[in-house]
Image (cartoon, rainbow, N blue to C red; front, side, top):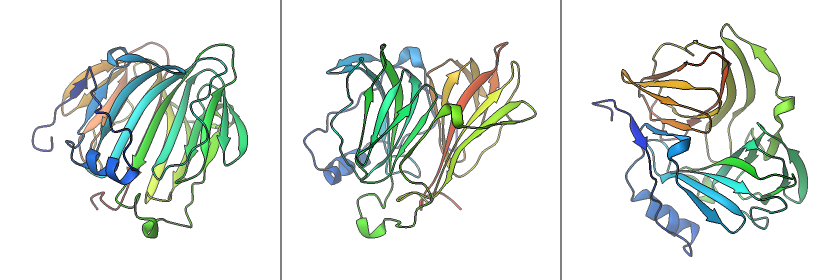
Length: 276
């Protein structure tokens, strides 16, 4: 990937079953998989399968250049259903609500979360979500593990980002030259040196920035609009619901090819393995 930039277009994701394993054993099995490079996951190409509580679309479950595990999937909960009983795990987790209304459980407390809201679960905090709306609720899920995740002695105890819900309506938009930006959070977590999430809106026909590269890996989730994704001089068009993973130091940029504004979430990860 580093010598010949290219776009990997994921049409079908095969995730081998790892149920019944300890978290450490599962992490070791995932570590043996190929490292995830820059990849585009189009919403319409993600395979849909039924679950006990609704639907599920698997995206990826692989190591990357800087993460021990990057796992992502998209869940749809039927009205009245919960994702699962409140549970805990060492990997940190982010959820973004695509549509519907959720009741979010965090360590025995509950919080509301509507469309656009961002949920963050820190290492080993009890959590779950329940669909409290009259229609199905769909949300993106991202789980992150680093070299420190399964080593409690390496966990940060003074992390800046705690488990919480960031409601879309309370994220203040800041005007930019191309549209607006909503900062969600930026800081250390229990296992990441820095995790930054923001939502960017750019007007029709605008390009977010010139092609650029950076050591930290990046995930983009398209909330609304149609984008041309440029990686290494090649482009691919994606719409709402799609996910874009940019590997460390791969050149990339985005252009809104629609006439209406496009909004997308941007995640950037810095770990002990991120190049300096």
